[in-house]
Length: 348
Image (cartoon, rainbow, N blue to C red):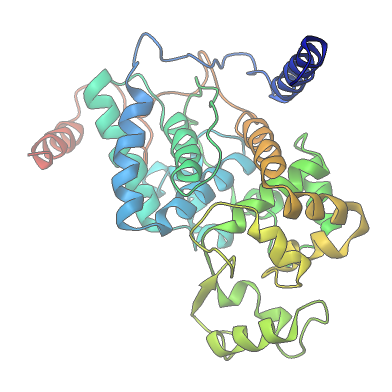
């Protein structure tokens, strides 16, 4: 039987642990709020979750696509939905930049489908960038990962970044840990954030061309031989067009097996495997491989920090009426009328 004193101490320890975890969650930046749409669109998150449940059940690969879309939006010019803009905004858009060519086309359509459903229910009060952030969170949850609150209130950007800015801000698959850490440090993300956010590679697929430099002409010595042989079966040449799973153990489940892969020298990208090779990050990889709850806690912190980078709020930016283009002038425009009619009739 546990004594009253022991019970009290246990309660204190549990309560203290709870508050430590809570204290680690980054506060919303100015202009964002945990309850931003509580009055204007209280059903926002339920609309998105319900729709994505069907989308991801039909094609689990869309979870990784939506998560990656949020990453590529936030790391370039901030979380402003600029990656959603197509060439109609005065191209070339971010979508034509080399790192974005492999973003799933279906992901863009899903975001705009969610936008339409939300705007039909609440009016045009929710930004595409907020919808993208919520969709990324739900993609994690619906594949087995942690649930967490998303600070909301972002506005959509009016311009997209240049291709050079895209190249300068996204981490390439061939980057080593020094590059990864330095690039993320400029955005206020530390080594733990870097390793935790890399864990997003626990779901999804990769094109062979993103890692075949590790196979041809010579094999990367940090790569497990059996793993390399299997990759060569799927990617027989350096310019193969095939795809492989990012996580060979549980490719469709958001868990900590990505880190187990790294410890077994079965990471796909240089930017993945070098996290275990480099002594600055190896301990973090090992801790996440041993403790999934720890990984989940740190991943949530990293996602909230990343999701608030250089956001537009208040009078900056706009709430797009379609996610792939800037809003048009308020003056009468026959093309706008036709577009809105087509969208209305397509719902029937």
